[in-house]
Length: 476
Picture 1 (spheres, rainbow, N blue to C red):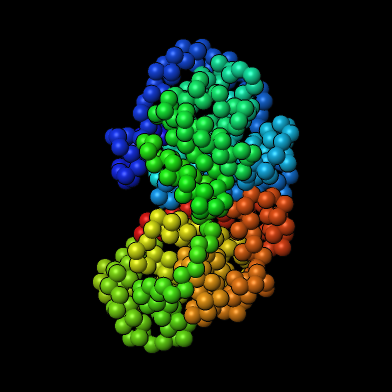
Picture 2 (picture 1 turned 90 degrees about the horizontal axis):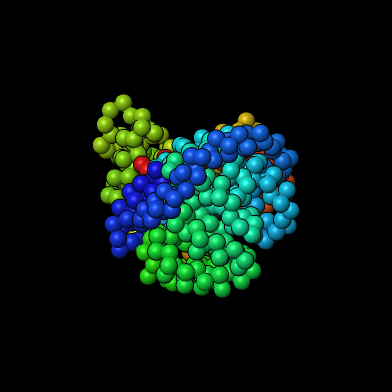
């Protein structure tokens, strides 16, 4: 299933490959070699792993689900990596194998509780696991059609367990994608196993990542069916260099890291006319302007009007009859819904790059995440304001202007401005919490959750719901 879906994904990304498919079926030959071993070992393997039930989760303060966006070379969102700890440096602090094993089981337990199959057909779930956990039956409770399992090669030992090879072959046939997380000491395993893995995974927060990347580039001459996934890229310049180096290698190579929300050089002299019209409409709604004023503002921008009509006619708006005018769209949606939709369209006005889309994706998740965290603790007005806090937390990154210039024209509520400009006020802890869930610092997340008076279960549920909501909205 994973191979078929990625072939379909390539059809939407023709520039990413020179061939008909990204993933050739080169693994079939090696899979056939292990089929007999797989069939012979499957019963005994099941007996062996069934004896050890999934361990209880670690303390609640250590089981907040964190996510990092995964993009392709054009910075188009492909999926999300879910984790408890973000990068190699943080994981090094918990390098004890027992603790890592507990972390992985806790992550699996939390993800199994969630309905990952709802993550839509073109968004994938990336999860890093040890070789030992891959052997556990609980892995197959994850939906194969959206899951890419990243196995840490440093958990193989000196030699590769034949049962592990058989297990990977079995899971591949079930539809799971696979990546091999390598280090300087474990790169040698790629030559032996590359036909079983879709990705070689390089962690750029680990020591000497550049040397490891160069070694992977040399090795790709012998692994034509294998792509590269580079994690923890913190700088847009590093991303650009890596993407350029991989350009000559066929396939959808993937990237993950905070470079996506990194500030680029300011462009204060650049004003997008479409965004200026949306800002004017937002101000008009805030000022309770008459309906004809709003309708006239929508008519001035045909692209904006077409998007508003498309939303007004969607299932999300549930119109009783077809909406074909600005007046009717405003009547169907109402001013509050129109204001919220305009905040989204502010991100996708004009010529959008894939990077802009990725920024908008993160902003949408932050907005919905912060809003739903409020739950019954805050009023409806406060929940709406928290949506704006999350939505506009990346506006300066999108527009490439300082936040002191980007935000004042929107005439936001004082408490929203306090949270966005000074990380202060009663909304700040909610913004801190949703951002902390992108950084993989469990202790920081636990502190923020306590300040917001929300439980670990609530944080994880709201986080997943926000991801699903953002994807559904982006499809309209």
